[in-house]
Image (cartoon, rainbow, N blue to C red):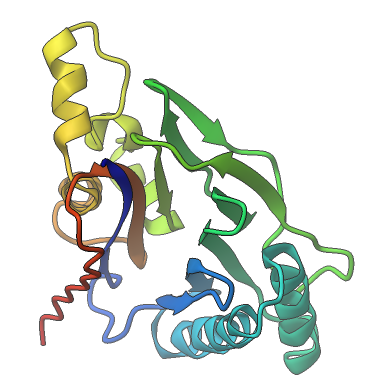
Length: 245
């Protein structure tokens, strides 16, 4: 019997010559089934940005772990940051949740960067304008809910990826780097389907680093969530982490 498998992969790097990344990525299991990934990008870069993104991620994680719905989590985290920092500090926040109760992928976004989604062989961009959290009183997230199905892929990224190459007059093609752009060759479509979430995340980050000539102009993070067909009987969960030091 075929089952679905959720692949989650992250690739990230800090701004060139910065000791710490202002981007934070955290993962938490949902109490009613599923998993949520929080991507937070603090204002500016370095230690001050890391402090902000950690603050935001911890608040969001605690609420998600208590069973609070994603939209309410984003609003409460905004209120918390705005109160804690007096409305003078912002952060971009994306929550990607695999909700096994509704069997959907929920994407809650407070970010200038869009999210790339591929489903049923076609690409789309979640790019509705929305504000970062922490500044404006009535800030709310943009939320999209997609049914889980094999091949569904979401690529979330921070502004270090989106702005890659700008200093040298280049521009970042996220869909092309991920090999998710529409391709005429049937074999190419099969190749796209065969790529793992980690391969997609690595390709996008590598393309951004190439545009920035190995010196990223901002903290850069790529998160990929992909739904695959899983044929094994046993439901074995795995997690792998690579942390250069």
